[in-house]
Image 1 (cartoon, rainbow, N blue to C red):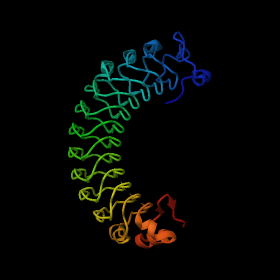
Image 2: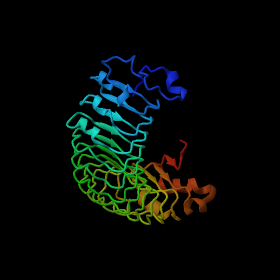
Image 3: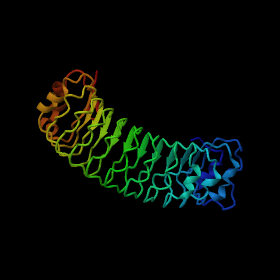
Image 4: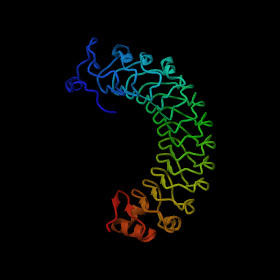
Length: 323
């Protein structure tokens, strides 16, 4: 979002904003975009937002808001609302001001929200960001059937539930939670990306119906085996780093696979690497550092990887291969 014409010395001074200071006095009533980032704002009510009946996107990032009071001063046909990194404790009834409207993007990440509420009639919502809160359960999203992107990372969620109706979802981010099992995703047949790293997963399962999945991020879990990818033929990127995997398997049928990130596992032989990946024509990037296979190979490591995977390889770990 672009700037608002607010004097830069106000934004950079670090001083509290005076209660009677009008941060928006120089802005045209016809503006379609308001950006009030990092201004120590404590209340939306004091901003006089009703002066801007044509505004489409508003950004209140990195302020000191504790609630959403004042949202009803914004137009009902607002399209994007960003309240990232405040002190908001709950999703309250003020969000219902946008019911049956045009709100497509809502960002309430980096707050202290515990429950997902008051979103049921935000029928136009396509992107919902709720990462880094204190949410313990996925609830009250069933009616948001136009959602394309759902970000729930870094919360306290233990279970994947209540996602069945979100059949238009393309990206699901649930990393850094307390999830123990991949389940209840069968209806998400349009899902392109699943990010579930840094949880408590011990088995790759529940992906049978995700035939359009292209990217799977499942690092920092407790996996000992690669499995459950038989019906995911469109996968291009897999991140299984920081697990307990001893050999590569269950990958040889993935003809579209381009990148495999497998650092920090227990892979100790090139045999499975060559068997699973060498014939894949699109494969070009592999991460294997901090595996026994790297540590045992010493200075010959990169050469051995090249020999195992052939001429299509373009990158080993963070270093591209020289032409």
